[in-house]
Image 1 (cartoon, helix red, strand yellow):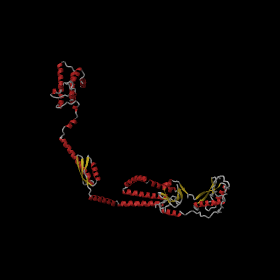
Image 2 (cartoon, helix red, strand yellow):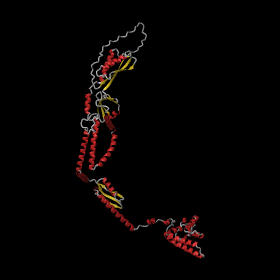
Image 3 (cartoon, one colour):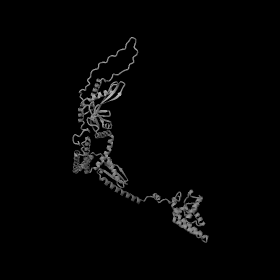
Image 4 (cartoon, helix red, strand yellow):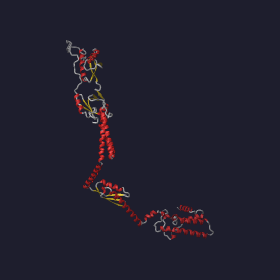
Length: 562
């Protein structure tokens, strides 16, 4: 500890320029490790030193740095004096001693103010503590009453300014006529009554926006005055009525614009050739006509709203319509799918009204095509509703698309018969039936050969517009069967092979019974009625008339926009 303090003393001496000679270094050492009473007791003080601040009980290593910090100009002057003293040697030792005593007296005089400031303290502070900040000392000192009075006056003036602004803002709104405001130290206190919570919150927002308000104490109470509410509603009604009367001319002009554009859209839908499609798809023409009319009407509505200054309403409605469209699309996905499928079916038109069709496993005649279902009438006379989405994805077989239709059936003859003769006989029999076409004419082909029979397929074409397909097929089977039987080519009876065991003694084999005589049958074609069946025609007519309004396969009966 002593060595380090000695080094510290040498450092202070070097800082003051006293280390230029051994005598100067020694003097610096003596000054740094001066006896305790030189600077305190020598000046008449009674300071106390803690054990941690003394070395060997007699020295204070921090005294000289403390003096340097408290009186830097005087210390530097003393140091320069000592430096000049030791740099220029004198002739006599008494002079040097006198000058040394003078320097020590100067240092003691400079140390007296520092000692006076620390007098009365319980424990001397360190060197760094003696340089405490002025702000800390000022905070411990009592406040100046004049400054306090000035600050209070400034606060009151600021509160008055804020209260004037708050009162002015509240007075601009009739909803705050029962609201009082007071400002204390930047805090606004609202008292009084308001009709609802919305007005209460609005008052807080209005006051908070005033410059200088640091907080708002909202002590407003809700008062539900029925008479006041009625009066307020009546005032609002009168205000809106006055606005409506003032805007009546513009409103009439807007209504005229909407009516004019609607009439123009109707005229365009009914008379412009570009939107009147006389094709196999009348429903498409109806849809386009409706779009044209709707487009004209929307343009008129937009112009009218712009004239009235309500275009922001259109923007809000369109934005809401987008969100609503997404929700409705998910909720009515099947309905939308059926509608679109119906439109596409009306464009493709895979069938026409009254056509005989088979859709997957469902067979019947087409009644109508609506926006949701395809209506069929089965051959039993029942109504069959198929979703348009199912019909659009299904395999459709249209029996009526081509008026010519081929009928076919199969008959069997014995394997011992002349197969070529059997085919020729059947074909000639079919050719003689009324309603069977000669171009292309009837034909026959062998199909399946069994141990006892051979199957022959017979084919013939009929015109469905003149001949009923089912009747012609039935008559062909009957006549060809009669012709083959008459020629002795009837289907042989089933043959069974029976193994007989040896007969008993004295018995004789039984004779088979004779076959019954064949009955003569008429082989000539009969005059059967083969005209198309009209059993379902009347029912189809009634059903189509009942569903004509929603039938997308129908041509519009009136104007295109109906």
